[in-house]
Length: 223
Ligand code: ADE
Image (cartoon, rainbow, N blue to C red; front, side, top):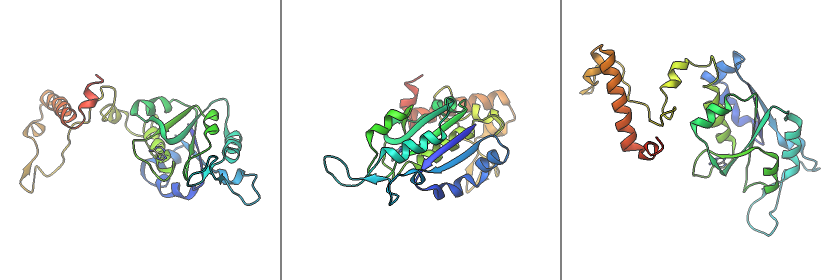
């Protein structure tokens, strides 16, 4: 799978894609990531990519031309184009599963006070990573790349995403523990030390349900 990111701040991605599972996925050719600075596509003699909003108001608005031209340079018939914006549909794990099946994703990172609304006519989808406003779409793009890449075949042990929070049954993951059995007076639940797999499975199902009920009752309503 290929992911292209259109951004004004390519350096923001360096550390994130240069470590851990994402780096390994890139090295093992499970995913290729291309970063395009759409400032390189501006026709403005001063390399401007934004302008003041029609109708007045504070801040600058990203113009159509640099973004649309950058998009045209990388888009193919197999591309799915996503614009990151707090005004988009809220991103969910189920979307990560759908995107992991795509050949080519293009993620457009907005910045400043917003973008010219006509840009939305060139994209397939507008996505938000949650109900809060960030300084730009770069961190949301990293969130998408991370959550999608880990689902690609051969990136992590597939059994481990079957157990993830939000997977299929809309439940949070159960609690996990590791050595020592007692830490600062706090014991690991006895059943997990019993070696009885049936009882462990039951405990985990119940624990996942209880955690979901107290922390995210909204998820249970979707079942
Ligand atoms: N840009 C700024 N805030 C955002 C958010 N919450 N999701 C996606 N893109 C954004």
